[in-house]
Image 1 (cartoon, helix red, strand yellow):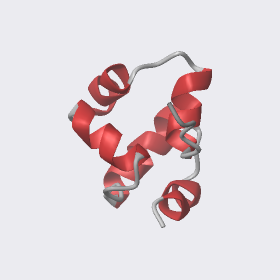
Image 2: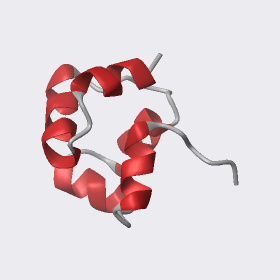
Image 3: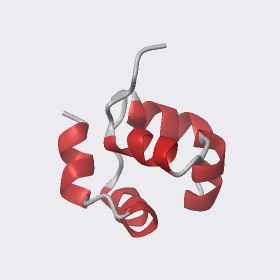
Image 4: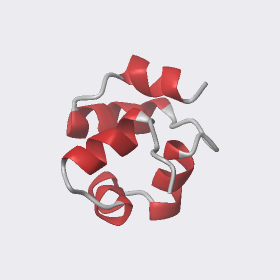
Length: 67
């Protein structure tokens, strides 16, 4: 499987978290986390702020990764 270089995927791997666990923490579906990490969707700003609060990844980095 190819390495996912999205900052959220990297954070999950470094912190031994599944998409399902992170989704539960953020109050979203695991499919939503998959879509963000695979650049199928960009997080809404409120979701990006929650992700940032949980992971320490900046909102700017999250938005840039979606491009």
